[in-house]
Image (cartoon, rainbow, N blue to C red; front, top):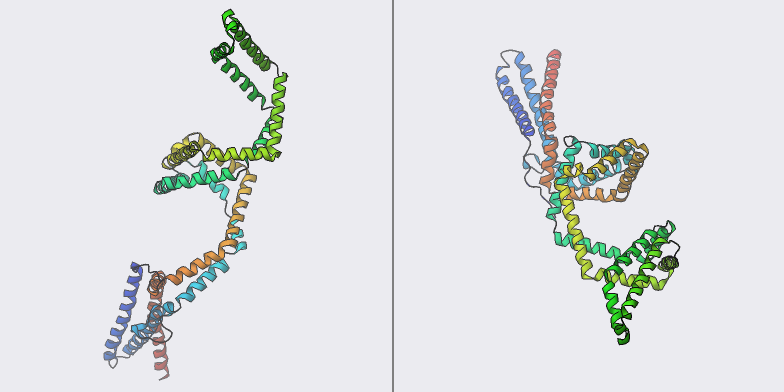
Length: 419
């Protein structure tokens, strides 16, 4: 399918030069007609006629050459005219080949990228004040990001994000990761504050539920115990014993129950990492958790919060830059400016990425250029090329007219001298 870009107006400079070249050719014709009448009166008019005659020939020849590039002169199908329309596809192929051979070459891109300081540009972008170029760029990029986020369908995008998160969670083997984390925490004694917190929670739960314990003992006790009031004594002894046990566990790191709890955690860490049955149980629990409607609602809320945060950042980047995030970004910019090793690493990574893109997608880019040019209709490519170089081609017509006239003067002068 041929794609037309519509009507491209000629630039004012091209129209003006066409008018000048055309008027100069007309002036030569008028001068030729006038000078012919005065040749018998004085020899000088012979030189004027020779200049005008040769100027007409040179102007007409260059008009034909310039016109033949883009169309048939006077609409006549003269061979080897309308060169651009007839060779449009070949021009696209050659342009694409030129781009591939001279620009999308890995060693050329690598050499060019060595002179580009991406880390330095990122540092200036992160540290420049709002009125600097970095601030203006941030404002423009933020406005564009906000428009893109507003234009996207929140429900559809949210569904995609939620599906991606759920898919990622489903693919992740939770048990080995949890076991490794638990093992690392126990190796650094980071599990002990967790045990202390569990003991304190048990103590608080016991204090809040003493009445339930007393009621249970009362209900389970026989009528004799209730009649004698021993059920209350049993309740007090039970509650006091549990309190003393929890206090001893809290104060004694080597308490036997604490040691058994740590052994249990150690076994759990091993089972999570190596026991297939434990891994299968964890995976089943994970699947049930992901499928739970409450989890789905949590993921929806998580996406909405993230989207609202992104919109807030995009709509007012300078406010964010004044906050803690802005301080972190500025510190990153300062680090890039001072840490040459990090800057070198980033620049090397960007250079390799650019070279990789050229190596992997260079042919696709070239094919895109070729197919785009081939997809233009002949009128479109003719107008675009003529608008691009037509002004200089009209200068050729002017020069051809004047140079032709000067050559005519020389020839007439030689003829007079020899005659």
